[in-house]
Length: 495
Image (cartoon, rainbow, N blue to C red; front, top):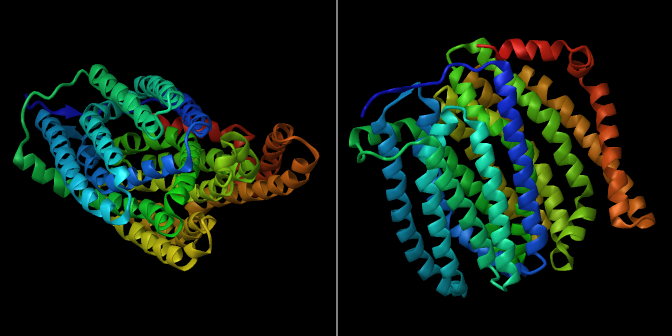
């Protein structure tokens, strides 16, 4: 029962590429399903519905820090785990979810009444149930990530996303209002829960172990602090939107954030989902570890940066067309929020690398600085207007990026100069392309219908980016086009 489960052996480059392809396909399907849910559901829901949903998400945010998989992270990171580790993580997640739900509902009942939002309490209760579903499935999912079973996870994620979309649309058409959002998530999470247990073939076969729990808490303390700070950072603009602009303002911000999150997840999830288990398997081999970090950053920077910048450039035209007049204000919010996500996607590799080396606590200092900067900017500019909420997040990212680079060097030894050489040229090329596309969108929007304008802007952006990247990135000129980079990446990925 307490037999140790070793880390899987290193994977070949072909195997990793195949798994990356499955993860990418899942990201595409989930992005399409997520965007479709926004585009379709906004035709049936009002900003106030999304506002109630946003309040529920804020209410459970603190609890999700504890129940979102932090205690299960050693399953993906440690070289050897036992069945006691698995059982303890499972029951700890369940217990925390139940306790956090009780506290959340008690506090919400007191707070919401005083602010006049008592109608949000049933929605918060439903969000607590969603949290419990997620907590129950974290251990089997972590086991599958440890085994790098990304193809199976991708298939389950795609099916869950599409089934949840269907349930949400059906409920919205029946006039369920905010409950269509809850129903969408409930179906998606229940399918993921069921499939994780079925595919991992793991079941809890014992109770928690106090000694294991103590060791786990010490092990994940850095991740817990980082997750808590990250949650505060994400909550700050939502709280500001509620305070300054009420439920309707929060509803607009929630729609914009959901759109931006779908785009960000699409471009970053394939690398982000694989980063921790793959980097952890190479943590004892510094040259290979640094090579994998560099490859992950290049994959994110060269693909995600232009996609985010390009979407931001066309969002003022695309988003109002997609979500309708009631949510037209989400266009500029989505554009600025997506640009802010350029920092977020690169940080996925940073945090995974720190976790893989067992130095997650070091990340807390960098994240704390980012959170403090974000809150100060919100206090200064939030009263200007709702778009300022997204602008504060964008400015924070630019101001604190150099400090994040220093954190990566301290945690992993990866030089700041090499980080800049990898990330800066694609970022500069992406911003240049985004500026050109945005400048072109104005005249085209006047001369052509929105769909026709978008049909020209997208290929124009691809051409602009290719030219800019060729001019600004020496690595592209001397390595990618010669084929040498691809040969070296294959060699670096071999065991």
